[in-house]
Amino acid sequence: MADQQPQQQQVQLRIDESKMNTTYANTIRTSTTNDEVVLDFGINLPMPGPNNEPMLLFSVGSRVVMNWSGAKRLAISLGQVVRQYEERNGEINIGQGRAGSGGGAPKLAN
Image 1 (cartoon, rainbow, N blue to C red):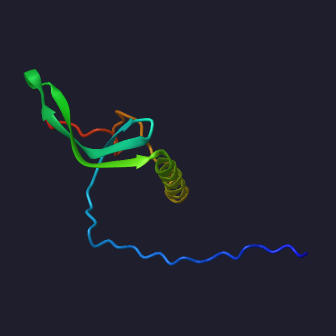
Image 2: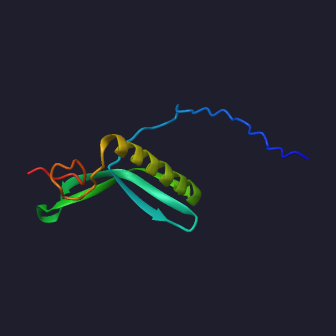
Image 3: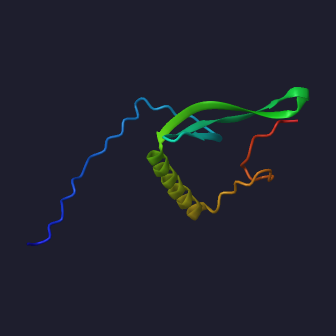
């Protein structure tokens, strides 16, 4: 009897963006349970604190909750996208407190 490989069925994917919202985030906070990963996306906003000391307010704009399988797929996908970007444009510097790095937390104006 000859080996028969199962035929792969192609599935067409349609993407509906009619209810999509686009937001910007410069910060993410993560928390977890045994079943889920919670991702809070938002913006760090500089503001004066007590005694006019600099302080950051994390303004949460969106929360995404996913199971661990979805979180792993997201991590793999983001890793691939970042690797491709860095291959084309050079390493992304995420060092904190470096002048001119373009990254890090916003600063209060004097």
